[in-house]
Length: 160
Image (cartoon, rainbow, N blue to C red; front, side, top):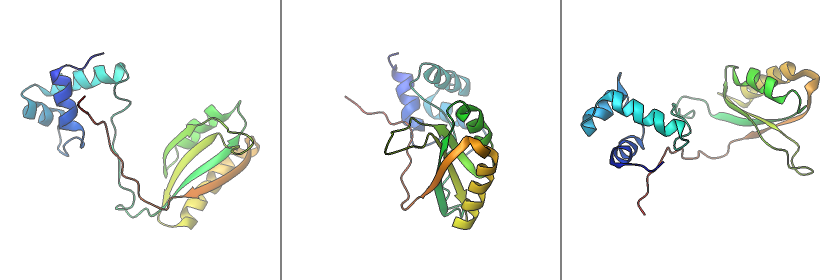
């Protein structure tokens, strides 16, 4: 899909985030001189065509008091990783959970779940709950704690 002028204007208007108002699409539409419905339809089309992967909130966990953030990594039986990953992704304290390819012999882990807590002890308690859920399908695990805050950005439009 080639982006037209309205698509580019929508991207520019939303690349720093949607307005924090009750009707954000209408606010963007008002800024651009189109309806909120048009904004939603164009964003939906960009999602469907893979130009945008997702639209979602990106919380700053540190500002919310969650300073012990750790990526838990799990070596889970391949025939159960999808089923168990869905269960883990639904747990409180897990912001995202996904499957990744192993890189044997260096990296044996195939399931990742980002855990957020106010202390490392809280994150480790969450990891223990996950270990119980995984049971004997889990062969190894670890937690990789964040040491820096990475700047998260959304879609950016660059001019050629």
